[in-house]
Image 1 (cartoon, rainbow, N blue to C red):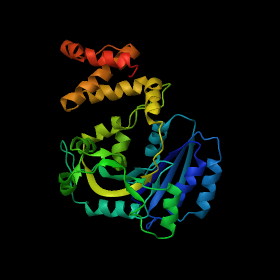
Image 2 (cartoon, one colour):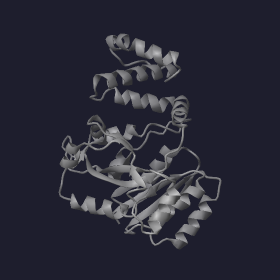
Image 3 (cartoon, rainbow, N blue to C red):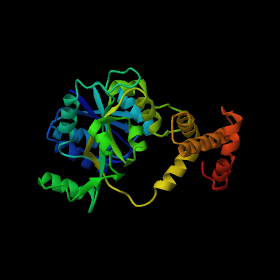
Image 4 (spheres, one colour):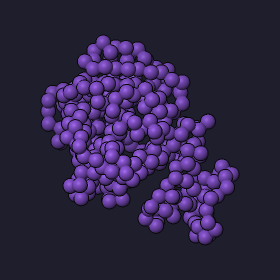
Length: 314
């Protein structure tokens, strides 16, 4: 088996049924579905037992005490024994050809080495995440089971597509795609071995660190195969995102400090680097940490840090 589809979940039994149906609709059943239940108190465990009776693919289920998505992700990675690892959230679905497309793409590039700093390994695959144009994900699922065309139902969840140069080259790092003008959400398939070497830090009393903390580290090792098609689909929710991020910043300051500390060292456009330094200083202040910065950077960043303080924005 080449691919594990990993789903972290917490009290999402109704949404998980839809995700399961999308896996049942796959044109290839050559995958393992690994579910890590992050302390659900609803009927998730019982539902999964029913899924196992209905599925024509392997399902593995693991329960852990509630510790947040990053701890669930780490457990999933450590349990995974396939070469490839795809994280599919419990409220998303896979397109019917997703597994088949991933396997074919990986095997088609078997002899291609996307080397960065001497690596001879491919990091994985990056594709679009789709969003629903009209209706709901349940409507999309009905069209899938009726064998209807999906072109009028979904679109890439992107403000700008992958650049023509990235598509033609067939490879880039995730950060490289964004620096080349891409803007939107992606589906990421990684080599499991790379994820095992780059687990999310687990901070006592915190449950979150930006996912880019790990992705930036993988970018230093190898490139991703660029696949300009929709693999997973999510449903856009109204509002709440900004408030959610603000809460995550306040409740997980160490995770965000680690993220900005790492980002400020990356080769970035000047304005982005200034932003990262300002946020790094702000989180140093919040956590009472010593700033590892030259004096001139502290002076230049002062107006930006002051603005963050005035807006109560970390």
